[in-house]
Length: 195
Image 1 (cartoon, rainbow, N blue to C red):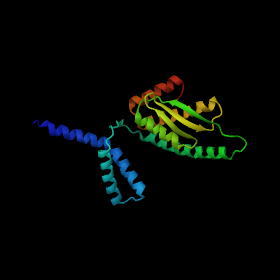
Image 2: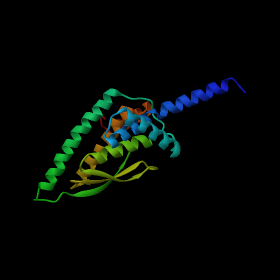
Image 3: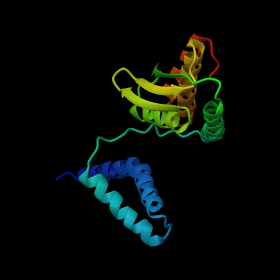
Image 4: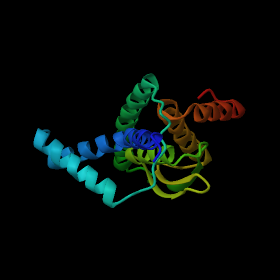
């Protein structure tokens, strides 16, 4: 038996544990939120539940970029909160405006990055903002299909697509890899934007 074998096994176990750490933390936090308790007992039972879930229901590992930009993360959070309030007020106005019915449309938006985690973050972000909801995704072609209210013409459709690309850009700048950030910048430069 090679003396390097236990060391390489320990290294792989450490790398795997490090990659799974964000998911463990998220599962434990979700457990504590579901029970409405932030106690040591809730933490320990959440840890046990997270271990069982990740060992029994094994999913393919998600490759994280290993990069977190706190500034762009803060920008994303602040813009998201403003958009939630603005979307709520817009939907409320559309409901209360009896003079006309708000138009609705299903819009297909092709994302610029090819990453499942980024796609999931963009989909969740768009669904949480009132006025739009993800109804389907095409993972192979990187397309999100949104049901959007308040759409009257092609300009509204283009505005909604630009909004989805804006959220994708913010998320990539916050947690995407350097290659993804460069792809976003290149795409923005070719489209004439400054995102």
